Length: 174
Ligand code: IMP
Ligand code: MG
Image 1 (spheres, helix red, strand yellow):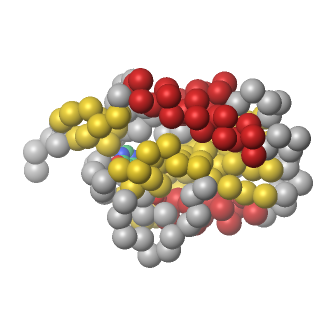
Image 2: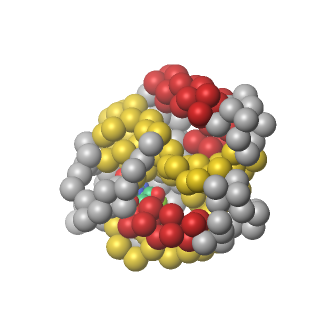
Image 3: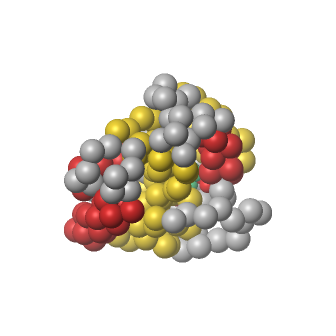
């Protein structure tokens, strides 16, 4: 097996910034007068959440939940491990789960179930990337940054074996 390398830029920093501002404005409008909590999925959503939160100019809070599904390499293990639970009180609050990428849906399935146990007023999902691929179960991803082909990507928080999260653009590996 050859080691995957950075192949080409799929989405540039400029395109990302523009889209994040648009998503922020959309959330701002939808959650006006609501108690909004962004829940970022560690670690991939950290950079997206930092930008998204600052694009939302209404009072809101955020917390993190830890989940890990990919082992080493570029294929999902299918097993979703919770590495950190919510510490914030979500009861009667409006939650937006912030994900780096919606891929097989395994993570989403597990996390939505877990969040609902906290008794929130509502739960919606905001994913920076939405992979166009077949899934066993489709979840409603209300806020989508970009829809992409079924390719392995890194950058803007997304990793390959924990590397490349720092890249400002989103790259395809090849
Ligand atoms: P899912 O459970 O298969 O939907 O995968 C969700 C998680 O897998 C994401 O939060 C990412 O951490 C990781 N993941 C899925 N696709 C990619 C990719 O193309 N690049 C890097 N990480 C990915
Ligand atoms: Mg990952």
